[in-house]
Amino acid sequence: MGWRERAGTTFTCEKRPATAARGMVVTNHPLGSAAGAEMLAAGGNAVDAAIAALFALTVVEPMMVGICGAGMAHLRLASGAHLVLDGYTVAPAAARADMFRPLSDTWPDYMKVAGDDNALGPRAVGVPGTLKAWCQLLERFGTLDLESVLQPAIRHAARGFHATGYLAEVTTEAAPLIAQFPETARTFLPGGAPMKRGARIVMPEYAETLRAIARHGPDLLYGGALGVAIADHLTRHGGLITVDDLKQYRTVERAPVRGEYRGWQIAGAPPPTAGGIHLIEMLNVLEGYDVAALGYGTADSLHLLAEVMDLAFADRNAATGDPDFADIPVARLTSKAYASARRAAIDMARAQPHAAGVAAVGSPHTTHLTVADGDGNVVAMTQTINDLFGAKVTVPGTGILLNNTMNLFDPHPGHAGSVAPGKRVTSSMAPTIVFRDGRPVLALGLPGGVRIFTSVCQALVNVIDHGMTLQEAVEAPRVWTQGQEVEIERGVPEGVRAAVAARGHQVVPVSAVAGGMNAIAIDEDGALTGAACWRADGTAIGVGGGYAREGIRFQPDAGARGA
Image 1 (cartoon, helix red, strand yellow):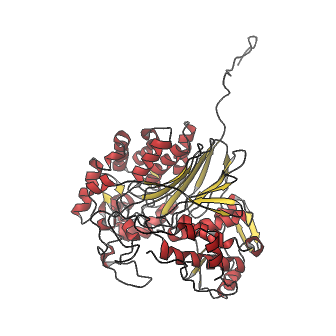
Image 2 (cartoon, one colour; image 1 turned 180 degrees about the vertical axis):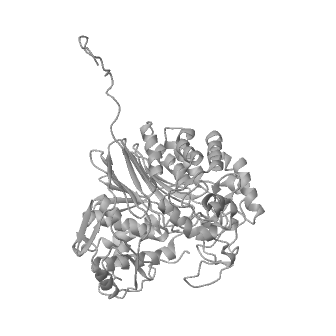
Image 3 (spheres, helix red, strand yellow; image 1 turned 30 degrees about the vertical axis):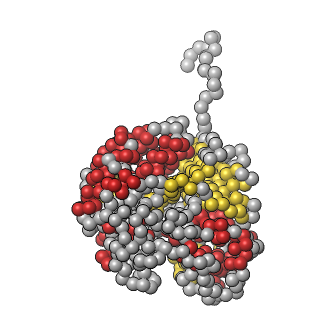
């Protein structure tokens, strides 16, 4: 097993990496990774594998991702094409800034509203983008048809699969809310109690829905019979989404945001997600320090990370949103000059309160997959239905769990993040691809809400500054803050945590910061290494070997006898 020891901080990697030449799939469930590997084995490319894996994850990781969800897809193709496809949800046309009644104007209850309407039930559902985005990616860049990539998901839904301990645990956590929705409880609370580890889960209605999508394509949802069923159900129960909202939904192709850290080129997802720009901002600030000399896991390095996170979150809260509704200062936030000015506010001896350095313009439960193939296609996709099991609403007869992304809007009118018809919410998704001399060498991402881009930053620092292997980088203990308490994983020794607290931080030990990171490294010769961490059911599956040489057929010697 891998291990890493720096300045008294020792940790052991719980998982092993996978290596391969023809393709690599890393997702947060073994059956999701297997679905992607099945497509690679069938001759498909990384896009085929990614979309097959995501459909399978809607079955086996249903609390995190669904066809009526939201997400960001970051692709760098062998052709040289490099893009981000924004498939995030939007607010329905009938949505209004005052549609929710906030219960508080201060944290920590700032986002809470009367009746939990923005988090639970039909009014919490945003107009979904995932199915359209996945199908568009497959049609534009894949090599297999929709019916083929849906087969693993259909198989697992129809025949059933065994619940992992992780699924059983989060179902128990969400059980009181799930119990309020009989259609959802029927699947996940059999007999009125949460499923146990190893329980067999069968989703026959969802299998039929997937079969119908295989036959009719995404239009079945975006204006077709499936969309009608969803809109009718939501309307009858006080929701806002209409068939016209679904017909009008559009994905958005965006250019990645770019930066550089110690000669490594960083490409990330742009607004409306905050992940890419603030990842680059953090790295730019860190570049002014000898991070390697500070050491991994030391009080100095953790204090510096906390201060840089505080700076980034001050800017995120002030100046990130939907670029169609606000002018986001991307160039300034990602510039070296801006980082130099922000760096001057850091005191290495003492924690400081940090305000935003730009003028104001305004879920933790997600999944991420990373896929690469032997031809040079690289895909990093972060996808969500927001909270565990989304809005907890399953549409009768379809098996579809709906998102609760309206919970990500500021429920107070008059702010950049307030609800508006057609607006996309701000997320922290950070599907990231890293280059050296123009060649992709690393792709990674993870779930974890506002903890996502800070965790990606730490993984990159682990590789670039601390010389960790990929497996070590994704499993290493993490830290997080957005300017309040500093969460430090218990893998960091108590003495180091105490030394960080002595600098003025309010330290809170936690079992995990953010979720399971999935990463792939690409060597100069094309060899692929996949790594997943202990924080989820992450699994790396590689495809090696290959086809026979052309023109070769076994022919026994004419004089040979016997078998």
